[in-house]
Length: 184
Image 1 (cartoon, rainbow, N blue to C red):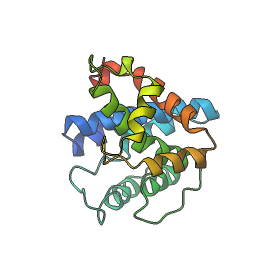
Image 2 (cartoon, helix red, strand yellow; image 1 turned 90 degrees about the vertical axis):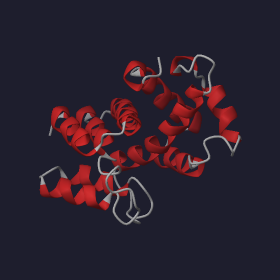
Image 3 (tube, helix red, strand yellow; image 1 turned 60 degrees about the vertical axis):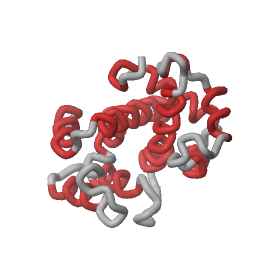
Image 4 (cartoon, helix red, strand yellow; image 1 turned 180 degrees about the vertical axis):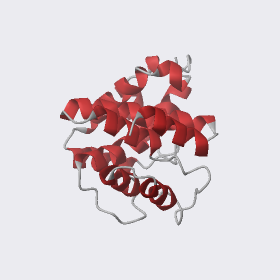
């Protein structure tokens, strides 16, 4: 298991640039949490990178992420990584047991909100996004209405981190890859 193999898998099944940027954002957030918790940064990052690799071709709740997880199993990916991919949403009803499972769930939704906030900045730069601006947009339910704020709150709580700390961790990680995200 290495990033090159994960990248090849992602780009084999995902052509949409925004979905690839989402994968990169989640990877960055996962790496930040792995460092924070003293875990395997490479494994956590790769898990974030590939968590939605099947979404473009299998976007329904019946297929995603079950289809992708099955393929990962068939190709010999680690069991804990496959479980994290399966458990990163609520619709399969799987428990998030490990810290990696919980981090993936917590990071996934938040990246979308952060990108949305960046795109309404006059500069359209993630470098100008502040926690305060995210919290302000958080309260506006019409803003980025597809982002489930309750999932983000639940994810932060399951990780045992304060919501503001969670936002700061993921924002900082995403700012670190601003160029890759096209949000410099």
